[in-house]
Length: 145
Image 1 (tube, rainbow, N blue to C red):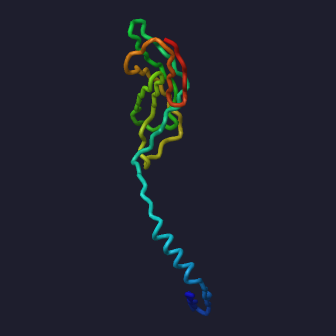
Image 2: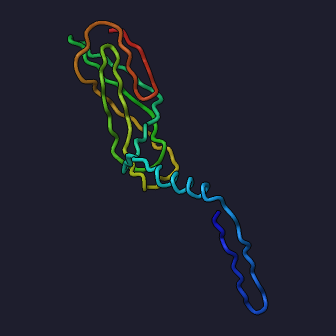
Image 3: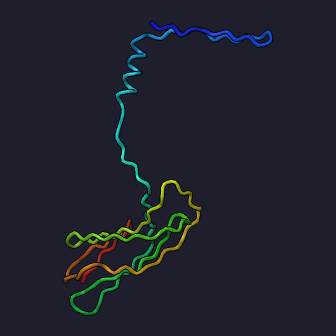
């Protein structure tokens, strides 16, 4: 066992007494082992991906063949920070995924106000006749061409 000793301090007649405590050696050793052996690697990013809240998506089809699609998108940013909007597109067969977001540095404090967002997004590529699903963040809509 390890004895943690007490200490008496005298200040103008007053005394502070810290009592001795006992702890089993194996408990302290286990604690030391746990702390030392629990290192983890973590990927730390300099920015957060802040998704835009999407309220409305209007799908516009071109009259010409092959068909192209553009989206009129409306929503809001969840804070008042002024950072560029990034639009990523991915197409998996008849499913089109659009992600609208901003990369905001983690050490920035943004004002707690909602900022309106409105944009026209032209989808990449041409679309053959058929049914498609268009996903814009959490908003999903099906169309037939």
